[in-house]
Length: 255
Image (cartoon, rainbow, N blue to C red; front, side, top):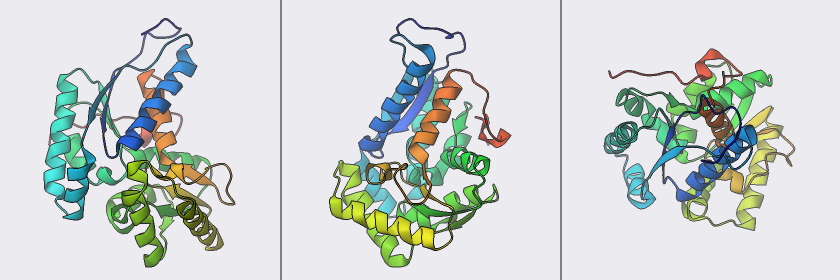
């Protein structure tokens, strides 16, 4: 890496990606930009990346083969640790469903995207938020419970809207496709969520920011990818977490 300032605490981060390649590219870019802003010059992050082929992963998700997926990602975490990673990031909201299994498989810390997002919302005074993402993220407890334990009530769209958002993610966004029709669908969803007394909306899928501008909306929007990357850059530089203690990367030993 090139020269810069304040690099004595720099740590190496492992990324488990490819779910999809689109979101992993965003992680790579945003983490490196975060480091570059801190160190100046031509400095960037020291990252190790293992990128999966999303096609079989998506098929296993559809078939509810979560045990198999947990084993695959846990093995990835172990390989990254053996290659020298000092911490881990899972570049997917949905695959945090198997976060506990991944964390149990390695002795290095792993940062949960839900904790980072919830901490920022608590800091901003949000107590009720809408959640959009894949059908797994919207329907199941693994993500919602993680947010709600911070004292934030979570709501989700109606079944028809959930089905359409899930379709958009898997059939369009994971392939890098941006549709004006889908942009309008998401805008309608956010408007409805605002009318339902939500104080904010969580983009609980890493690719959704491709369709939603977090700034230009009638309701505050929390881009989980950006928040995850920001926390990752801070950790790489050895910075203390700015929010609640549970946001810090905490090492989880083998269980």
